Image (tube, rainbow, N blue to C red):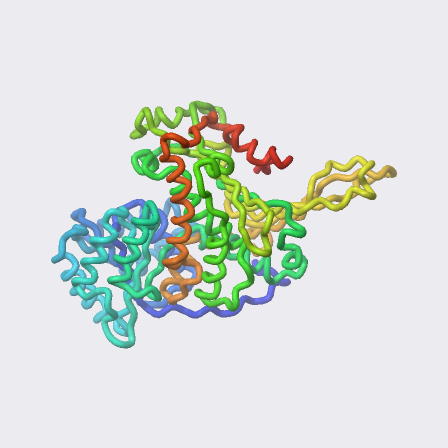
Length: 510
């Protein structure tokens, strides 16, 4: 049902027909996210007619086998009601190409396979390569694409682009090396480093909330805001064999370096000069460059908490501690929880702390931003029965996307008693439908050549330079702050509470 009070949205640029080539086509990302996203876009009528999908992987499969596997998973995870009437014509555009990532001949045969598909389809031979493989294969794939000439547009009117999945490096040195490998193969304008958090509807709406509403923009600075909290809470642990990867990454590298610093930059950025991709990304990079660095292990110890979960209970079920999880060494010091107190040293945010926390095995799965405004002077109501809570704007990234504004109101009755109340906006109830999945928007933007929601090279490297200083302090055996513990099912270690308590603040309970 359409909302009668909502203006019709402006028409976005429709992407041209193309072939999407997915490296790592038999993996979980392809089955659970990428193909369902393309299917949902087909149902919504967003994709151009004649688009093809080519899965590139080493396992021996036929087109029919590959299509059937994708159909079964799509029926389980698609946000749209799966329909054979849509799936059948959609699946005929799906092809399987068998090759190892290190097999040079496989890329030359891929080039021939693409030419055959494009000849049947007609029109411009546009190509979008998606690196959905394990990260160690990124550079070999890029090199073989270059050697086979697939990095170049097939003719002067077409384009060839690449999407690179996270993790984009494991530190500054590896990120620079990968950036150089990408730059040898694709121009920066044709490179799309994906962060699915930026495809979430609420993350995209942060700029609209800030810059299109006069009630917020004048208050969005240190004279009115006391502090900002960014929380990513996960209730899962190391299920599905994830421990092998996670123990090499940890909460700081896995989530803070990319997703949460991206959200921080959207909340704190200055108004961009325009809404072009580089206009927005210039403003975001300036935030990362303004982060106050940690110049010593003592700085890190004062402002960063790292912790591991021990055994506990979540929703009545007992779960093991991190060191008892599958594929985790018994002496691991990898953090499953991290909390940071950050400062942005610029004119707008001088003196305002930004608190970031991310943890595994917490009570619930949720990601949100909460902006805490300064309290008004206590001249009029300091003797009244007020709860003393400040105004607070909450931006819910997931689940239940939306915003909530907490204000103080008088309770009904003869006496003057006050209580906090919430003004709540939810996407599903206001717009009558669920938000598209993040990968839907990002795939569509890459096909249209819009890089606004993708990370630029300097953005990635600036974030890694900041994170590397923390890891350097943790690796300093003589001064490294200890790894603390918290029980699974709790909201984290007491040391994280102390980060805020020293300034008479508390974490917002999700």
